[in-house]
Length: 286
Image (tube, rainbow, N blue to C red; front, top):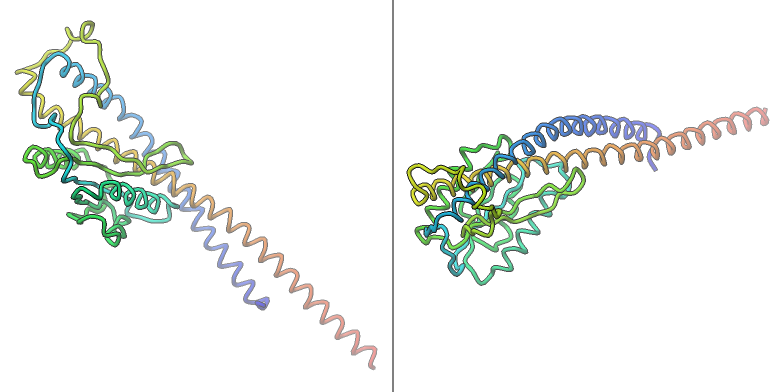
């Protein structure tokens, strides 16, 4: 059993930890507010871009290597995790989901890119060859990084180096629920775009020089916007998960402090009672 001094030291230690978790929760709350704002206000642009691309594909009969669907023998999978911990089971759930996804594709050759420091444990799974590692992707999501990534993947797909490209990331449902999800980038399917009524809206679409020439760059930019949205969404999931985890840690610290304080008071009362008994016994002996 701990002494009164040890119990008091333990209470102070838990209180100091609680101050840290409370501060981390406040910081995560502020970052979550900024991240959800950026994610929400970027969605209309992606929706409008998808609408234009959908109308383009309906109005023009376009054939392009990016639209070619072939048997998936060589896939590239990007695992997008966070760079920092203390965000509950966000990363562990993502890695389990990624492992299950690759097991489903065990008959195919899969190469993995690990984004984020917390994706590093996935190397030990041994389900795929790790092609590259990138850090600090979610610290400041960059559209330029997304565009260069999509251009690299599109060149690999057109050259036949890969037959499919996927990203596995923590999707955002709400401030409490964040679930692993997967998004396919290549092959690019027309069915992934919203259906537009060409008859009523095609007159407002002016293309220069022509649809066939514009198509490759438009697809790359659209997919870059989608990837950028995924980075923003993953950042929102990270901050929401960390905010909830730090809130739970703060509440748990309260419970621990209450139990330790109760034990401390009981032990202190027992020590006082023992001293009184000793004093009383000594007085009676005299």
